[in-house]
Amino acid sequence: MKACLLSLLLFFHLGATFAFASFYQWTDTGGVVHLTDDPDTIPKTYKHKAKRVDLPEPSKPAPGAASRPQPAPAPSATKAPTPGGHGERWWRQRASALRTELKTLQDARAQKENQLVKLKRERVIFQRARDREAINALQVKISEDESRIGTLLNQIQVLESEAAREGVPAEWLR
Image (tube, rainbow, N blue to C red; front, side, top):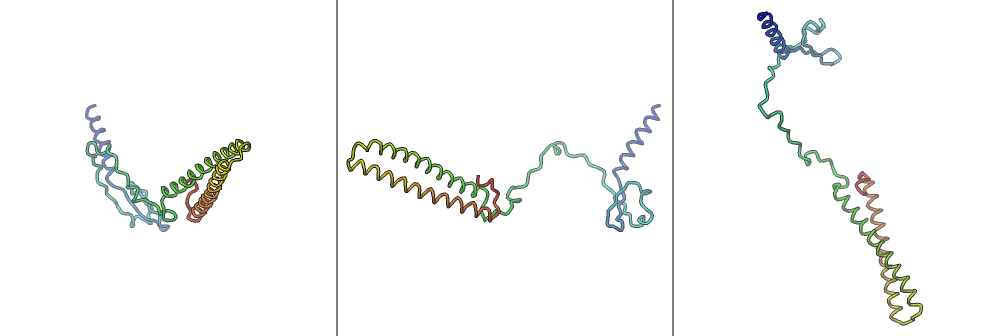
């Protein structure tokens, strides 16, 4: 019984070793590369073209080598060309800066308009020169804000059209 078990164990061990040892490769008339480990399966027309390829026996990896992660390629090595000569960060910052300034000016203009309405209500009773000067100054500030808001809206529109022309993804401008 021990001899039978030993011979079976030896047979399976050697069979596995030979399976890793070699295979046959040939290319048919269509250019397709075929591989097999059984030379009897090679068609007769390609038997003379078949090459035996011997593989080295698989070696055991060094302890800890399999668990060690491979370093990822550097992001700059796979960097795609940037649209318009600017990176994503530039497009995002530019759009964000314009939109932030626009929002700030719109909020300030609304506050100034409310303040102007309040001043006009209070000053209806008093018709002094300095009351009129405060109203005029506030109207000038509101007018300047509206002018700057118009400029910012134009700059945002120019940035969006430039981004569309350069092929910048729309989410970069949000």
